[in-house]
Image (cartoon, rainbow, N blue to C red; front, side):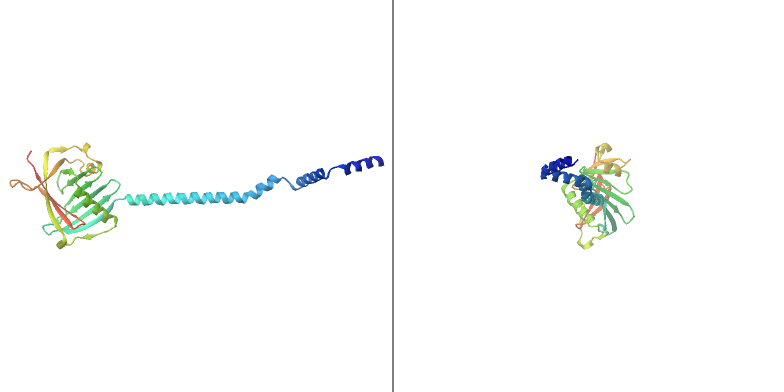
Length: 244
């Protein structure tokens, strides 16, 4: 037995120090647990911070998109400006201008002192101006012109400011009269006009009109619509029938 013990001790002394260190390190690892598990535990707080950051970013994106959508919707809602003036006869007249940026239209509703309302629609998208006189069972249509665009742009700017009521000063207002001849033989089909005119003149005949210098002496003025613009310019649009 003593000889075997001597042999074992001799072998143990011959074992390399490096091998013994590896064995000791292996034993220490087995005693303390798996290194990968310790690494995963250490990374858990980092992943929590990362996902919290992503959640905050997504929340801010959703809030930003929602705010932009709401502001865009509010910007496209029709805006109204009210205007009070006196016509050529000195009678008090109330007018409202409704600007619809979505449909690219400006609609003037003119209420006379007799509480009769005429409508003038400027449809910039389709290049049309439509007149619907009060208590008249017809609409009158013409092509839009450059000076029309200037007037409706000014009305759109006033509407965008959120003005509730504007008063034109009678002594500072310029008055004009223009004549439109009705082409009774040129009835317009609803299929040829845009949706705004279709809605305004539903179930009513539509006739083309053209600008003329003035009615012939034997022709009587059929009707007039007084419309004013924020530039202190009022126009009395008068209609009469042209010969076929």
